[in-house]
Length: 365
Image: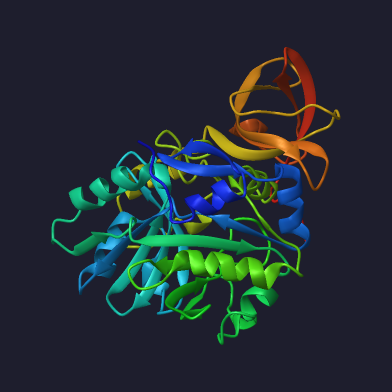
């Protein structure tokens, strides 16, 4: 039996196409991925992302536990700030990528991927020898992502919080549409101005917020947006997707996440393996690429070749860029070929199609 978010009936009313995503019955599209994608780039789109997981870590050992579990340095956080990071296995493979929110001293919220909720929670429990208080509140929280240039104008109609002034990777708590204690965050997964609204459904009406946002956004071009548009939007920014671009078989250094791997921390799980990999050198690297030949769309799993017809990698994410009107993708390529502006070839429908490596994002503002 698939799980459903508090907005399921709203999706049905809007005649969304629903799919199984991470064990949830989720909308992949409403009126078409192209239209929803363009709405986010040009005005605003509202995503139901309540399938994401929320863990709360409490008490004096909270920071120490997060520091051991994650590759970034959570000691840099202050209340009201968020951080992108990842958890690794001892061999350096990625357990999951996640966000860490510092709510207050000795209280943090970890936001993890939907398909990894159970795995991540078990991983944290198994690496918590001090018995720090970790609570899985995923079923208690609804999550909306309001994304696009008009998002601040729309949200500002429903709250006294000055949402225009929330810095990137920061958050505040406020009332939205008379619903209390909403975490209003500005992290984003689309490359546009936007907000994530974490709604504790034990004391707030999530559907009321959904309805109020659409009422406030009807003159601003707000559209409901599904997971299909979320994927095409994040790919244009070169953002990694767990299960495609990052997995247990890839490391942060290979996945262009070296910038958030803080080796000056005392210890974190996977540190020794990553230090060894750094010393020995990478054998492959996650690269972006743009397809030169029009009307050729790369897909995950396609093989990448060099000019000498030698296999040098594989595609992990690929799509037709709706904004740029060309095929784009991410893929792992042998390190000696993982440079910008390299000519590569991708096997698309039994044909070798020329492409060029680029450094994401594909879309620059």
